[in-house]
Every structure is written in C-alpha cells, then in structure tokens.
Image (cartoon, rainbow, N blue to C red; front, side, top):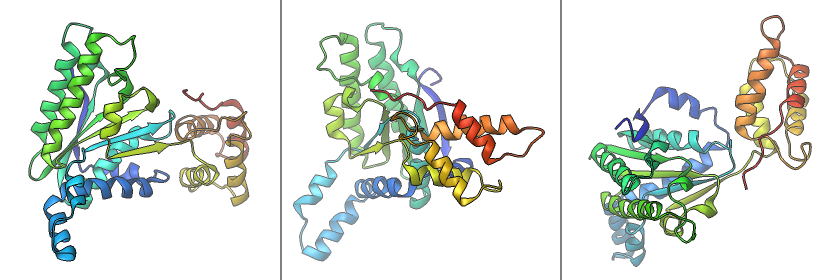
Length: 294
C-alpha cells in the first residue's frame, strides 16, 4: 500500500487530540459533520425514532439512508482543511467510542499515465478502505487536492484515462454507501468548481473554509502566544495588521500565521531576546500573506 497512501494513522490518537484543541472555529464545523454522519450510522435508531413519534416510518428516513458518506472541504490554501479532516475523524471516533484508521491518499495515485493505471490505484485504495472498516471500526479516506484526480468530466481537454478514473471514484463512493457510515471519504479542494459535478452532488456536507476574520485571528494569536507578555490591545493590533484591509485585500491565512509569522518571530528573538510585540510587528511587515488561488 506504500504506493497508494502517504500515511495510515490509527485513531483515536492523543497527538491529534492535542492539535485539535488549538484549532480555531473547530467546534461548529465538527458539530455539523458529526450530526450528518451520525444519521448515516444510525439508520435503525432513526426508524425507531420515526415510529416512536409518528407511528410510522417517515419518507425522510429513506432520503437519509440514500445519502453518501462523502464530506467535501472547500476553500483557500492554508485555511485548515487538511488538519481539520483528521481532527474530525479522531473526534468522531471518541464521541462514538470506536476505533479506526485514517488513510491519506497519495498524489502518486495519479500514476504515470499508463492505460487504466489511475483507475486501478483508486480501486485499490477503496479496497483497503473497506478492509479497514468493521463493526467496531470506522475507516476514513482523505483525498487532498481532490480536483487533481476528480476534475469535472465536462472539460474537453480531459484525457480518457482521467475520465475513467473519475468514473471509478464515483462508482466506489456509491459502493461504500452500503457500509452505512463505517467508511467515510473526505475530499479537500482549493477549487470546488473544478470537481466533477456528480461528486459534488453526492456530498453529504460541503464545508467552506475561508481565511480567518478579525476574531479568529485574534483567537489564534491569543492561543499561540500564551505565556508571552502581550497586552489585549497588542493582540488587537496584531489581528488588525494581518487583516485584508491592511494587506491590499488579501488577509493572512491560518497557516501564514501559525507556520510562517510565529516561527520567524521566534527565530528573530532566539536565543538572546524574549519574544515581544515589536518583534511580531516587524515579522508581519516582512512576511507577506500567501496569494489566493482562483
């Protein structure tokens, strides 16, 4: 499986739980995903609920059973889609008191353009997904940059090999619907409009990820700078300095702040000075926000 997956992670995982606690805006997104996936996992309980309150099985129960265990995370680069996917999976298993695996599909699944190769690799990936799922286990497949292997088939430039792979992907997602939520697929994309329309229609949830607003940036600075002598006013100023208004309409992403600004500020202070508001401001002036993908 080394050629198909970048990584297979056993869940729950204490390190992922720790990382989840630092995520800004996680709870609201998780509640939406968990609420929807729980319905897919609870078909018998739903029927009992319907009979209890309505003395019959409502037509809406059938609609819920027809949903696909597919979640699409859509949004700009650096907005937390990848880290959210594994955090969602980890938290969901904790809530359900189950175990499972998180399989991150490798970009190598695109193959080398050989006839049928990409479709075969997609097929193998879903075979492993089904193998890892069980009565007490839920298996999650994460397809990052999904538009790279699931581009809309309506484009005239699309190679026949690519169309065949998208057809296989759709077929496999149709098949795992029969597993009643024991296998779940996450797709992330920076360009939702490039994803094949049939996949978008199948998504139980499409979550939009945007660059953080003022309050979210402030929360991120507050959590990340715990223990550093920074005043409330200075936190406001840092949040404003990283806004789109201060940066020609392009604000800083979560990863811009977490992985670029804060580490570079620490590098400027280490080893002779404490981290300060002034160093953070100087760093923001030097580190420009990552460009948006259109």
